[in-house]
Image (cartoon, rainbow, N blue to C red; front, side, top):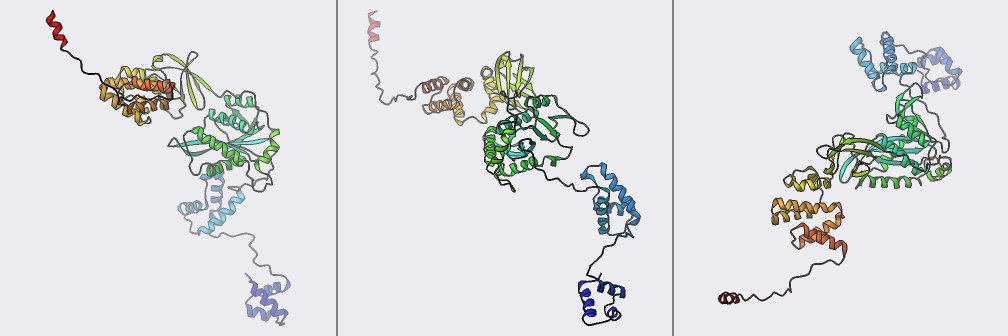
Length: 500
């Protein structure tokens, strides 16, 4: 390869100093033809070979091509890399060449065979108010002091970039529907086209091309809101890249540091405010803010129906000997008087309601794991009062006892000390029964007052509670100035006896 300084020396020696080609060839060691070519034209540098010979790798080229061709039918993450090809050649074909030679050939062969070629994307300008993208993500939050894994529902307008984010305990169909309902309300309308992955909650079967067999309930939901679903090709999540980016953005910006909230509802209220605040954001390369762009597309959305979709499921069951009914692999308690009776259950995305006939007999927060028990203590208090020996081991009491205020523990100790264990427990349960009809704060205030004045029965707590609810000026009268009567004169009894 002729270097630039040699090129300059040859031309200067001939053109400036008049040296002959033969003399320059002798001084530089280059051939006369090379010197003539330098003198005729500009410096062209190194010219790569038209074909690269592989003297050592040559006998194995067909084997490598076959391996790479076979890779087309397998997942991308389980295809041959250049290192794997090199190792197989050494182990199976006694290859003695260098790894760099194999790397160079594999790189060229993959381009030639169309294996692992990177995709090229088309720049797009979405139509205004036509398309939105939907996806799920994962996140962690601390709810009520407990670290909880959650699912992040995301909906994003392709044109304006305005988005809606909400957390759910799972990705089930009811959660998907509720996310849509809440999202449509947030946007104030329905996007005519929604773009998804091939969610199992929406797609029953993937057919050739873009054809899909939809889940029946999803088809009803889609028909109620009149949007058109469009599903990505399998494994091609980049076809909805906007919402894919939103999942990461919301996790980095809305969930860092890990948020703490008393409940999922409180967390979602915070996320709602975050989504509203994002409207003032200006996306890179755009002159208008997200809200300004969205105002232009609002009129293109489909109107919301007058009545939202009834996102509920119904089932029936029989109350068992534990006074619970099994719903979706979890147990929910009902009052013990309904044991062994048939009931109807309505499942919402966040709660479960149990009915006997037309009467609602229980309402619970919905559980999404398996083999969990939701036991409300008030359903069992009367039965436990009849069997006070079961108080310490009763699961509803043990669960409640982990969170009830310390004043109740003090009251229980006071009752047991004054009345004995069995009678004290029974009387204490009478206090717990007050939670059915009275505010928890009022009850605990009454308990504190009763403890202050050394009251030892549930009747005292009830009296204090009723007086507190009826009058804000409730107080105990002091006995410090109480006047005692003089002792009675019993001598008169002897006189009566004598007269007889």
